[in-house]
Picture 1 (cartoon, helix red, strand yellow):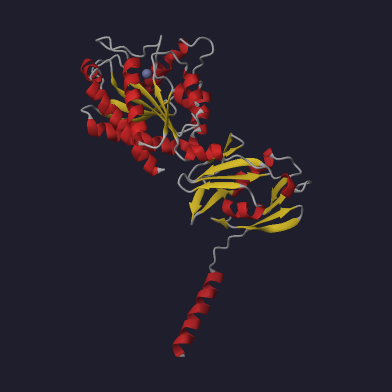
Picture 2: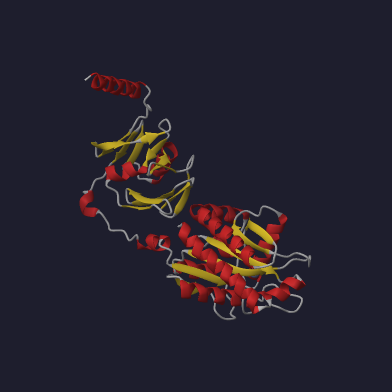
Length: 383
Ligand SMILES: [Zn+2]
């Protein structure tokens, strides 16, 4: 009996303490046509709100991918996509910046309140949405139950399901790419490794593989990206060989899209973008502004691109005697518009006579293809 009393006292004490030192978080009240719908949890001193609560209260169509930590939901029929640990949100395929990252806490996703609702309010009809003093008010003139549209999320799902890999053999046709001392052409090495990679993936993995080219033809950079996007690729791998004025330069490296951080990276991108001159007036290089936009647009899959790039480097290093130059970033046109995780692999320097000799060996190229294939296999496990 005494013990029970003691337990009871402890229980009361905890209750009192939790009330005294509670989190003090206020909640967001949601109204629709002046009807109170419910309350949304907030955390961090009322700075972030639970998107899961918003979905439940507004009965929004939604898609939550636990693996990639992305959430899609709707406000007034506007499609909104957020990603854990990312500062950008996508609303109807446009990108907006939040004041801080989206975070995941106890399996709920939290979005910065102030910046999010300001963006939504600015995009909404003035009468349909209002956010003020911890209150969210939706106004609708029609009966939503009757007007709910079914939205096809299969496109999104397909991407997340890792169904299709796009392999892009660099250059081709009238564009040989870099040419080595012995006359080896980058376009031929790239195509051979791409074909070997395609075979290994098709044989061993349950995914579709699309080649941007499987013969010696010329393709615009924009055509390559279009093939990737039209086929809803889950991963884009562009294969190249490097070249430098300094014949001693050697090794393999993997590039991500990004701002040209140094002269070297800018040079590699300039060389790979040079094909634009062969494309005629339609082929446009990226302006600084374009590059910033492209980098931002890829914010939601930048982490995946980086994971894959790291794996490519790791796997090549295991298999060949060549210098690991690491993962870098630069402004590659072919990567800029790809709506999926993407990398550009430079297999080696065709301008270095001994590396050119290695690249001419089918065994060496097969090792490189195996390495990229293993990287794809491991990357899938991280999704
Ligand atoms: Zn190239």
